[in-house]
Image (cartoon, rainbow, N blue to C red; front, side, top):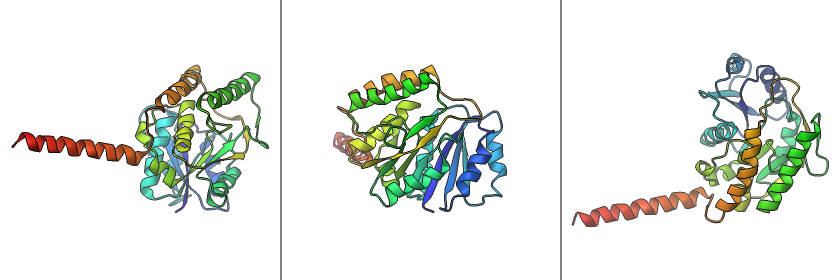
Length: 265
């Protein structure tokens, strides 16, 4: 029980069975956790119907309402940490991420010293297929803008194909991550970098979805633009380390208890 792939879904009935089949057919033994946000198209039921096909490998967490990509991954991270998985992946359901590349991300962490492995479109060997020119401009411009503002040495900061070592997700105060779209992906990498974890970028070929509807929206783009500014501003007084936050909270509670004790004497 070492590796698990988190796949958030909302109306992915055209893709979910095929992406699960592709992941489970890999030579490495992966588990998959689907986080479904109440898909009205029956995505969750398709997953549950496959439990008998992939016993002890496939899991689902169902949430009511469309609560956003970021909260889905945070929910999944906590679930996977609790279950003891050592390598925890983020991946889309729509085949824009090639399941075969999971093993390259895994190797980057397991054998090559990475704490976080990012499937990158913008390092040598990486590329994007089937995108219109405006999507290219938004994405490349967003990546350059993010690096200029944050100084984070990651060429594809909005990438959603990622492998985390468990220790990274255990160290980050996940409750301090509040963005839900592209800015969520940026802030997670920013938090890992700020905490001194080693991020390795692995070149991938990103292929735009062939089935189902894109979740891209103007709101997500706006969050990315404004979110980067907010992330950098907050970094001046925000500590992403869970242990520091927990210790500070514990000390505050201790002082409050002592004060109450004194007041009773």
